[in-house]
Length: 288
Image (cartoon, rainbow, N blue to C red; front, side, top):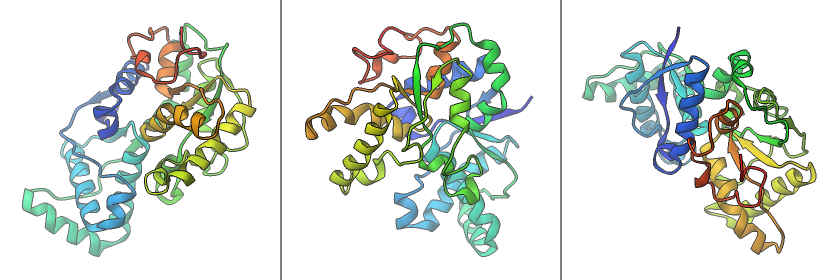
């Protein structure tokens, strides 16, 4: 059996640790073995990469070295972390000069990047274990209509993510359906949630989020299911302000895919911290 080094990422560990709780419970249930490593920030695949690509590569490679030292693949719970680690692998595989330069930096701390281990996004591991998920379902989510949002960094760039069709993604929908939930299609499935734009350009970010949520509402979804901590926070924390800004009503709860699976496995909402969600009162998940 493969043992993965768990890469939780900064956001989950520091801001939404209940996501880690549901993920660990689900992985344990389906027999996916994980262990810890002293990873640092990945670092994030947009900001730091744009300012200093060399530092981004060095930090990412240092994390990869930790898994290489135990000859174990990484499983990432975060779109951004998976994107960074796979992106670092891709650049260093295809540019020997960069790899040599990064290894000179790593030598200062006694490390060398070899490119010998794999980095897996947890959704891809879940999809490989669909039969185990279905077998563990004791409380089918048949009363829930869910709209899936896989997030940009899970699918793009396709050159190194190699996970799903970037325009017609299906993996997250197939996993959600394995819980018995009714997966609804909507026009803006592949649209960004607006998180990366919202900081410097809040009006543009909010316009993107509104377009996304309007499409989800039109499809009649009770819940948005995600696999990215940044997207989770965007949907869970921004809907109240969006309602005020556009004089509308946005109150669609969001579940991490591992939360949906955990609930379908009969794990209580208390055990996975659903009470910590901001959008939950008067929604379809309030009493799950």
